[in-house]
Amino acid sequence: MHLSLSTSGSFFEPCTWQPEVCSKLESHHLVAWSRDVRSRTRFAPSLQSYLQTQPATEVCILHGRAILDLESFCAQLERQILVDELARTIDGPRGVVAALRQRSLIPGRTPPRQRVLIWHDADVLCRARPGLFADLAEAITGVSAELEFASDAGIFVQRAVFLGPERLRDFARQPGSCFRTWKDDGGVPFWSLVSGLDRPPVSVCSIDALMEVPV
Image (tube, rainbow, N blue to C red; front, side):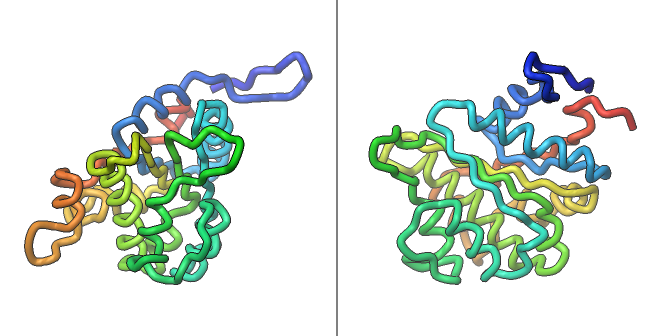
């Protein structure tokens, strides 16, 4: 992909692949991967900038290199989503799931109709704490499914983009991955029961293919 020069003299990425990604986000979360950290570095802010031009859209950025446990995940999430208190738990009335269920309502502004979480370097926690990562990823995809299919509070679409290298792609493709199946609770999985979905709606995509980066 070539860079274009604007009239102000600044460089920017031409918007060709961003609408394609947004179209995919209408129905799926994304695991976006590339072996090249430079490609991932270009992809994320360009997608973020494009999303921020979309009406009633809230973009939340999670910096994965600083997310090593539940405390550090919550510390970032509470700076992105307006909540009174975020307990350092996944479940419960003030946990991560409860926070993800809330819209960020700001007086004088149109309530958001969609929220996109962009999790940079998601492979860091996936590698360090795979069980915790799976629980958090399922919380995100599960709440998103609940909001879309089981909520009577109006349409609110929530999606996540998990960014990382090839190892994140490989993890996402594993048969028992949290990106391919809901956690088995010994019966019908909770999020399947709530949403009616048999599995999380997650798609794996190559950043280099999207951006037409030579390999």
